[in-house]
Amino acid sequence: TFPVTVSTTGHAVPSTLYGLMFEDINSGDGGLYAELIMNRGFQQVTPGTSAALQAWAALGSTSHISVVKSSTAVSTALPNALSLTVTSGTTGTVGFTNTGFFGIPVTAGWKYSGSFYYRFPTSPATQVSGSFTVDLRSTTGTVFTSTTVPFTSSAGWKKVTFSFTPSSTQTSVSNLFALSVNAATVSGLTIEFTLISLFPPTFNNRANGIRMDLSQALLDMKPGFFRFPGGNNLEGQTPAQRWAWELTVNDVVNRPGRLGDWGYINTDGLGIYEYLQWIEDMEMEPIMAVYAGYSLNGQSVASADMQQYITEAINQINFVIGSTSTAQGAIRAAMGHPAPFTLNYVEIGNEDFLSQATASYASYRWADLYNALSAEFPQLNFIATSATSGFVPAISPAPKFWDLHIYSNPNFFINGAFNFDILARNGLQFFQGEYATTTQNSGASLPYPFIDGSIAEAAYMTGFDRNSDIVFAASYAPLLNHVSSTQWTPNLITHTPNSVIKSTSYYVQQLFSLYKGDTYLTSTTNTASSPVQWSATKNTAGQQVFLKVINTATTANTVVFTLPFGTISTAGTGTVLTAASGTMNTPASPNAAAPKNFTFTAGKTITYNAPGLSASVLIVSAH
Ligand SMILES: O=S(=O)(O)O[C@H]1C[C@H](O)[C@@H](O)[C@@H]1CO
Image 1: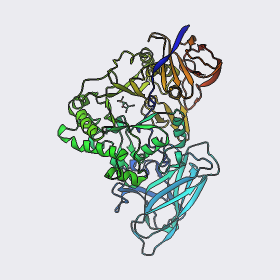
Image 2: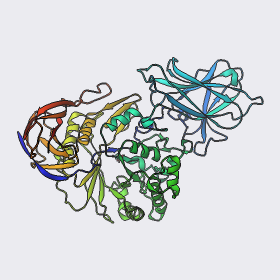
Image 3: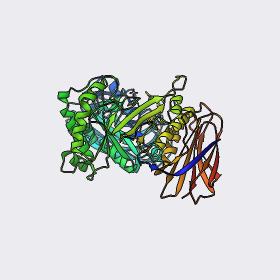
Image 4: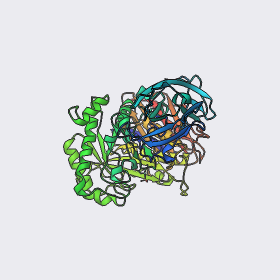
């Protein structure tokens, strides 16, 4: 039994203590970003190759499609187009299909909103007109919903929009988007198409917005912040391929996209504006990174060449908070948000104390950017990046905020519960920007989080609660992955085109975030060797006390709390996540482990028998 006396003293818990780390790592296009058409704009592809046609296929044997460099591009950003050539005399229907991002959800009642650009590169002598048919269908050709869009063959690109609403939901996501036309009406002609786009309803009904079900799963965690755009995906393989904010703003027809750092083209339809608008809608605040002159081929921008990137970072921040009299603030206003977005934290780079990045970060990249940005924006907090483990190297100007990353096994997290207790209180503030149990203690990899690792993370997180006077933010990483396209496991949430699988670690993150309170209450000192870790916090306004109990042993352990409050309800409610060792939530067993609610007898003394491998919170009204 573990006797725990809770005191009335403690310290404030920052609102940003628990949040989300995000980058497009099989999680942006085809994930958070709600666009349903893969390779919609043929961005960054080589015309004439089969790769250029990724996700696209001809409809039937008489349709001839290829990706071409358009003789008249729809925009400088989008030079390519899909070309449909209709041989003279062809009869029947011709066209093409798209598979979506490994599937397309067909959901009854959803109003799907689509658009595309088309042009006839060679206008026929006699103008022709007719209509395209767009639809959602099964892979065997059963049409679920469709509509038509008129066309004329006059010269020049035309943008058309359409919508349709299925009347029934398909359980399978193996569906196709199809665009087709009666061959006879365009016999002998070629038609080009690009930026072929289809959106489902989006979170907060935003145009060019974010997927609803993933937004809801994240909203249900009440996350305090959202770190974006990376992580590795900030850095590019070369400086030229870095994430550059300016290529991600304005209409998507003006966004060239880029080769992301996870091996596929990012459309950048999820651009800085869409990130910020969604972060605001989700009642989070951004922790926004600026490129700091290091790219993942090991190349650092030379000191003499840094000014371009300093200016770019200043402009990026002005896009977020600058007045509309700045060129960048004016773009923000034109896109629909004249008021500045909330911004308190800017991270300078990502993992700059790794290998070749260290020397240049320490000698000029940090100082150049920190000095310029803090002079321009003295109200902002600038975060230095650290290695994937260990603490703060000596660089100047001395950073006040550090981003620490650690990926390890359950034992590390269990034994690390007091890693922050030993740190000096010298003004430094820490952001545990990335952490996760990524292997079993044996070293075996993890396709999904498992209960043993999630409970180990929970033990570590009691250290964040207890040390939230110097830990201002913490986020598990990576956040999301697509079940059909993954390069990193485990992830907090796995998604399919129409479902969200919440991992055991998701429920741990949710428990700590929902019940972080606004004040940490000091309690009986514990040690890293204990199988049980605890944390007491309170919500002052709500007069609630949250008692978290983490039991990393496989056998039950009893904790006896003594509360210092004069008024304590006699009944409390609680939530517990527990499962047998090795349990994982997977697409095949999405609810193998889920939190369960319970009630308990409360009072000055509360006795709780914590199951083996469990994370619990006991909620009691007290003041
Ligand atoms: O290969 S790693 O450096 O371990 O990649 C990690 C660290 C990096 O910041 C993030 O993008 C990635 C996965 O979350």
